[in-house]
Image 1 (cartoon, helix red, strand yellow):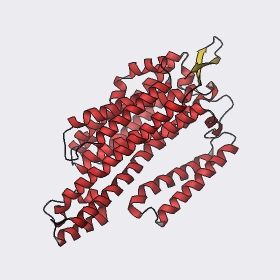
Image 2: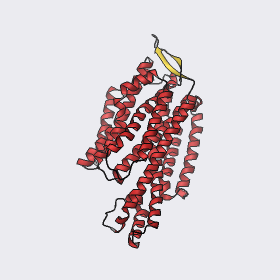
Image 3: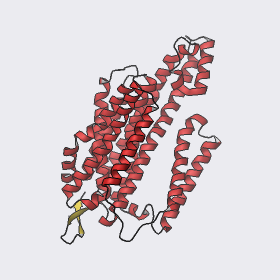
Image 4: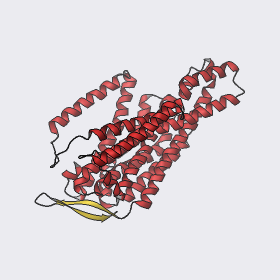
Length: 402
């Protein structure tokens, strides 16, 4: 829609920046609403709020949205939709279930095999479909392929960070929902504020520079977050690390879309945008799943080791703590009453969770840093940018150095 509704590079840059700010605004308004309903109502009411917002959005779209059809017509790619749905669901199930059931357990192995088979079937289906969900030929464009990789890995890093922060403040430190929402204000609230600056930078600077800078800022913020003391409940400690991640996200999310859209012919801009949206959302989904798996696996290993070598706990407390770990993991042990038999081991759980989620931040930072290096070294050459429309409504393409 942005490609079709803009006439100059400056207009497109402003539209992409506005789209990114709207996406980000939802990212901090949702936790804020959740914090309000969780503090002053019931957690169940959060779902009612989402349902109301969805209904309002549907009505607004029905009232204001203008229909747009492809001149040659489009049809649903049923085969592609089924295979990609099953493949991604199986992959995420395996990543989430691995730390609980064991990476070599039958359900996890079957899920990984299922994911590989159906993702392969997806590529086969797309190569034969008359109206494919995703044109695989787009990935022959190096700039688009790089933007696609960064969309997955970069957004994996960002939402993995958001997940790790929410777990740190909530289940680990037991802070209130409103205080947890503050973290998302830092992560997502900066993007709308930076919209005027982002739009100018998108128009005047190559996407390579913005992407590299944004990903590097995310990496620095994550590395700083990894060094925070898990026993420090002060929100002020989060301002610098999460602020850097938030600024980096503002630059990155806009640049990814601009790169994907501007590197393909105008008639494929919609397909390119849809592909990067799919990959971005997959990165969003994979981030919490993978970081949760890594952090909880590391925390479980550390707390078990601490219990085995502890000389301050009696046999009853150790046995009770092991029972809680078996049933609910380190987060459950961190939440038991201090006066109960396993409560004596809470300090070990807190230390282990701090260690596990510090590794999670390091993984997120490393992913962002690797993405920045990929962009810096490989995103070169020329990119296609839509030229202004002629009076007859046609649209040309100009090439600019990226």
